[in-house]
Length: 242
Image (cartoon, rainbow, N blue to C red):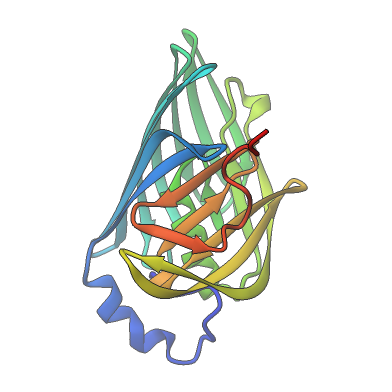
């Protein structure tokens, strides 16, 4: 499951048993202009049918109070089988359930005391991609590894109402490797840019498909794995000193 999006597929099948036997998890800081404003975690656990994943995000800052909890079931090929999301955004609660079948993805949404449903086109390479969710980026990288970085899609749950949920194509572009340290040890860092609806997200990963850092499209935000330092930083994370 957790192979790098850049690895050739030769030898992929040989790696799968060793990688999927272990649970994988990650702890991240959410930064805004270099200042910590929250935390985010994910965990993947292998099952007989594929994988269970969970993500928890907490952001607290002026203008944004954001709590998210997401649970997913994935196939052995990292394809979405079921997702349940609960979030509170600035005191407004939102619950979303997504269930795909070969023809469509059915989303049930509850927000502000109202319920709605929407149907989106189904794609086997689709990732449910809420804001600030490192587990979703892990799944995107894992799908990319098995799909040669092609035919990838993002399900975007935004605000409330069916008109704000959409599925968008994802384009991945590979950039030269960079350097960094993880828990004080040097690591080679792979760099991808994911483009969704003309918006770019820089993804930095290490071995076994572990997300190390994501530069998010929201102004000045980043997800950084605890203990990781990209050298040099992808972007200035702190405001300039006057």
